[in-house]
Length: 484
Image (tube, rainbow, N blue to C red; front, side):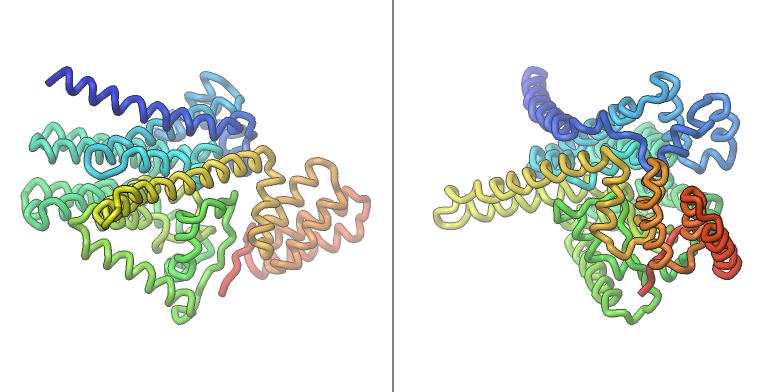
């Protein structure tokens, strides 16, 4: 038996290593990607990251403990080890993504199907570039490591009948580490509970242990909502109702991010919705409702459970707690593991169905061939996106090409050209932003800056006065939000 287990372990190790190596190869350009956008103030110029003493004083108190201290500690330790070297931060992100790829393989190998397909979909999916090619994506990838490891252990212990107090304590520690990496991974207990509903229907929910775990989850979740989510949401110009409607109105574009390889972008300037009767909101509500109903109806089947787990992972960031953006790609990373497992289930099911048909064995390879073509498109999209991220200017140009109404992209392109001394080009972009969003004072402030640099003091003064008038009238908004 030990010899057989050893052979099985080696059979797992070879495909795992091959998938991780392929992921590293596809992302070979990440090591020359510079700090992008908020990474400059958030890492390069952040004293909490640059000084471990400052980290200890700010992040180990009550407020710091609800602000992803474990992820921040990883940045601080990285800075202490290798200093101001973006490539080293990216190397760590690649390693974390590799670990998560292995965990997805092991989940598929032990409890679902087609582990090679699942791990390849996860490793190469273009959405993962947000957590591989952008340093700040580590918040979500590191938290996902603890969630996936906890889920794998829970499923193994439930299968083997060895889930005792020590194992529950281990799961609690992993869940805590996930939350300390990124607060939204508070959904980890819900994912575990969802498995219990699948595996034992309602029997496990009536147990004393399950009741205590549920109570602990509710208490921790309530604390995070009270001391982190609500104060943060209060700073957003979007109401919870509008944010929820916007998630429904953009349900189809968000779904497209999962299924279409060439949908990724640095930022997605999607529309916000205020009208509950808007047709796109109704279509989104129908889509989400259908998916949720299907997940519940077929929760005892692998595909239904995986779909439900995917939706659960979207609850903290894509429901009612408002942010300035409808979606950021790195918020989707935890759910990406379940999407990859779901795709693998679909491929294996299609191959099994074809194999049962007359003459089917000869056609059973077709789903795997289709998956291979799909994965080749993923890899190409990854390479293309990493190439775009070599320059923040190129990243914002991609955003503007995809969302021509994006005043934020126009403004950031103006800032990029202003830093390079391309004053006329910067002015043109700032003028475009001011025209697209006349209620945002920052765009006119930037126009005043560039006009002053162009030695046009009268024009600069006029724009400065307009900026102050807009700020007094509409408030200190620093970015444009587009409503329908």
